[in-house]
Amino acid sequence: MKSNKKLVLLSLVAVPSLLYTAPASATEIPKPAYILASYNANVANVVQLINNINNTTATFQTNLEAALKAYNALTETEKQYVTNYSILSAHQQTRIAYRKLAAQIEEKLYSVDSTSPNYYQNVTETKDWYNTLNAAQKTFVSASAQKILTSYIAPNTSVDKVVNKIQLINSSRLSFHKDVANARAELNALRRFSNISLPAGIEQQLLDAEQLVVKDKAAAKEVENAIAALSPKTSTAQDVQAVKTSFEALTPVQQQLVPNVWTLVDFVQGTHTLPTKDNIPKTPVLSEVAAVPGKTTAMTKNKNIYKAKINVASSEIDTERYILTTEDKMTIIIPPLYTLIDEDEGVMDIQVTKKANRITLQATLNKKPVTFDANMEIIIEGLPANSSFNRSNGFGKQVPADFIISGNRHIIQTTTPGTFQIIRN
Image (cartoon, rainbow, N blue to C red; front, side, top):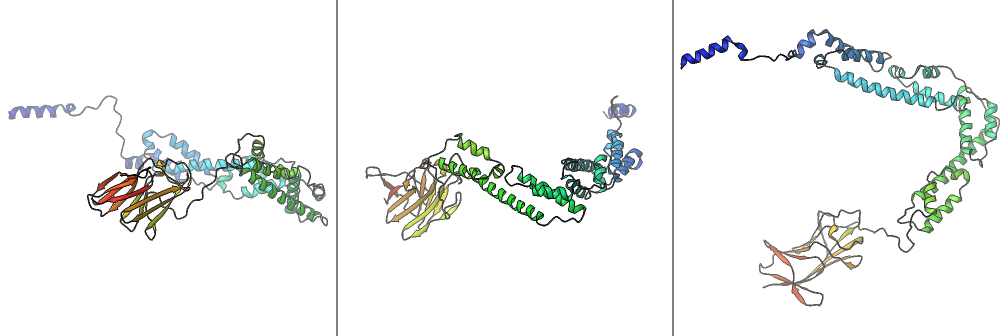
């Protein structure tokens, strides 16, 4: 047996291919990271090119492109050992942001025609913005735009033109607000270019017109807010008529400043079916001291009467029950509001009175008794184990009440309020 084992061992040593034979298609095992980082010139070159990138200098784009080109030329194995690739990726995201910024600047620059009186002011404002950029960001702005932003530009207006524009301002024209803005823009352009002064009273005319613009906007805003407050559920025809009257009281200049006028048109033309004055749904007035769903709340006590309030509204949590405690070894459980059959809203009043062996549970919503799909529970501790309960039915007769016993607690169960008599057997 021993000689056989030796023969087997000798055969394995003599034929090492039996231990491991690499498949014909097997690739070369990647070299460890430290070998590639130390000896692969391509990887080292890419790492250095990435380190050369500075996103605040004018060479940012050039250096980034050089690093990307060199990185893309690496093999997939070599790319795994570029230790600062995350920096290269971050620079690419920075380039995207710089391009967006340059596009925004050029969009503003070309938003005003060169023949417009506002052209000088627009170029000046854009130039101020352009000058806040770093050298790298500026390289993303087109050469034609840079030429305008770095050249001297004089206002294409004069004192006479500005004076004439101010004198022609007319508050009854639909273009009134635009005329005022243009006159102010030209005057600002002149003053930025040189220290000019206008004839007596001319600038005051412009200031008065600007004050009127402010008043126009304020009047239009009031009507805009009134239109926004209209609701198909709560606004009556009288409400719509009142807003319509307010809109018609505006001047034509003011009316064009109301952006939601077509909403008013829909109401006036009867697109919405409006409630009458008598059937407008009322918003319930809720209690500030109501019990919190899902939590324990101590009921207030006055003599032998305990009270609590529960808010019932669409804004309230309706999936949690209410746990109401007393000082008299009684706990009242009110089921979740979604089990409430009455769909009215308001404040539910819970009242429990214990007098001798009689317990009365009252639960009303808007002065009407409530009914639940689930059981309300009155939990009483310390009663004799053989105690039971009766309740009055609709005909005034005493009938057995539903209850269960859990430990030393008797639990009365009912879907409606009622009076219960403790029977001590």
